Image (cartoon, rainbow, N blue to C red):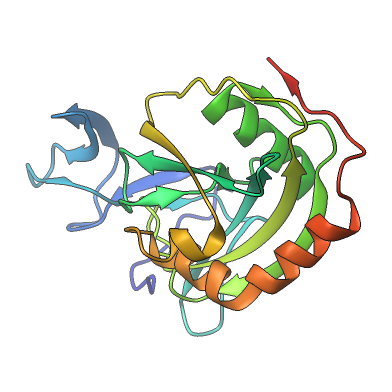
Length: 213
């Protein structure tokens, strides 16, 4: 999303309506899905504009807003990967992932998101790829993200406990996942980096134990 309206210079985080650019907005839930209500225009949308400009969120020379995301690709003993069905925008089956927060590096963010979204505590996250994903529209208003992807290999069955951002768990091979409804960013990452993910898994077949939280 291109930012075309004047920005404050106070260095603070701001949340704007995606329709009228007023603030603040309020997060609401309807039929189990997330939305953002603007009192100024009275509209509820699946997206808003999250601005906290720093090394995690920036606007490029064309006005395009960028966010930074970290995710964990979780592989079980059968060689299948964990996918979570989202209740938030964008819909589809996602890796455990989310925005990197203030004071975090990408590795810390990936471990935090894994535990928050599944209840699984990371054992040994291994970096797989850092990539600019230009087809990743998030609820916070960015249409492109810098993704940091890490691999977590489980060596015992995992008890997955979902938070309210997801409603269903499925274990799939990466090829099987391409037959499901995926957010565009996840499809992009699998199509471009499945071989790299599988190669990294083969390099470290069973040396780290993930601990369930």
